[in-house]
Image (cartoon, rainbow, N blue to C red):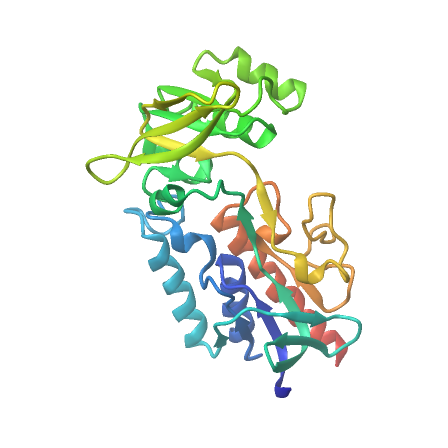
Length: 312
């Protein structure tokens, strides 16, 4: 196993949180290393257009926004490795990070590995993601003003998405595989009391149908009791089956909440291990927005810089 240079700061993850951290750490003359992972840029790279990130009144394509982040971090002296971390050892400093046969040492670690939206696993889902299919109502709801849409799921996440989307859509249909919602009672009642929301019970999506132009024409569903297939004609589909934080590497070291998100100390990015910081969706199970991730990335960079200064 080969050992790279000993870095002052290593950042795992390259979404808005990780790259914002890199910009701040690099401008502090700490020459960080960003380990980008297998999807450089994070979830925004599969988002067609971003209209709610400040500074872009005409909107910007998700991949272009993340490329801007990366080039800015690189401008100030950030080094990048486009690969996935296979193992970490956080028992003592310097912390050890393994990438294949390569061992990297760091005095401070910023974790920004994000969270992954739970998907159905359909080929058409992947093909139409960002083109009528979405996993973020807050991000994409505005694009479906006065259109009919579906929300897939039956828990609190799906109910929250459906209720939020009634601000834009003319009709929201929740597709749920069972005959009752798994959501908490208060969320169920809010859904049932909203005249814009209807629930299609005992059905599962099996295919997202592309329209003749770019977009969605409908969702093919199957009745879980009869096996009968039908098509729900809609222009948009939102997945409301939750998110999974990418914390597998850190489970043996860091304190996680019951949903698997890294717990950070109040008003900071500090974890329960001195010198290890977390930012973005890997520790945020509430907002999950590019702008909040970027803000927490700034916090992590400042916390890491102050930690290193205090250690001298």
